[in-house]
Length: 274
Image (cartoon, rainbow, N blue to C red; front, side, top):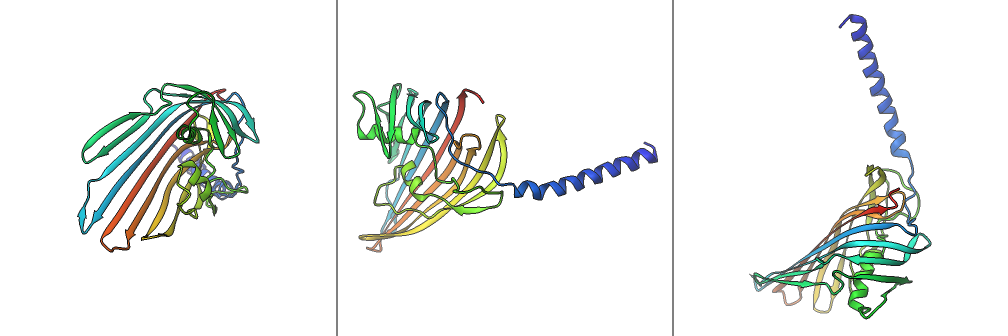
């Protein structure tokens, strides 16, 4: 390589480095308006799992543990969309949807009532119903988990990489069907990354929070931590990996209850692919 070519190469590397350095603050300063904007006729695949671990220690001795894993997958087609959110949809559930429970070393398999079924589902406010004879409350909870767009980490105004905001703990309760007796966890969200999946722009958001809780006969702490990936075009959650932990100490001073719930879900736009 001649001295001229070498000097030119060094100069180009220096210029490129300078441009990249100058571009980084501008990219990080860009604001992103992350909101729900679904449309009719969109079809999404979904794959959701929730794995709960129950451990009880009484008098210093461990009791038989229990693990319960819920799996549901299939497709959802938006038929009617109101204010950017699906209010009527056709949902198909894979035949393998079910609940696996392991207790004291024994495994029990139970299929979900909607496994292998296709249903018409409706959302009116916070109420979810389905057509046909399977429209009971337990199935309504399953429909809710599929139709409900996760608002846990959605900001109320445009945000930039590195920004923090308060998440929606009430939305989290609805998403994972926490009981009314459970407290709302104050959440802190942070936009960490803007990326791309299958050619679609995405936002990665860290979520965490905890709250002390006291019930009759027990005190404890409920915590949440994980990451949510959101499609910037539709506001749909493409990937979610959250862990909730609840630890309770009974006032007898002898018993401790630990419950951990690992929540994972993925969604992918099937049609129209744009």
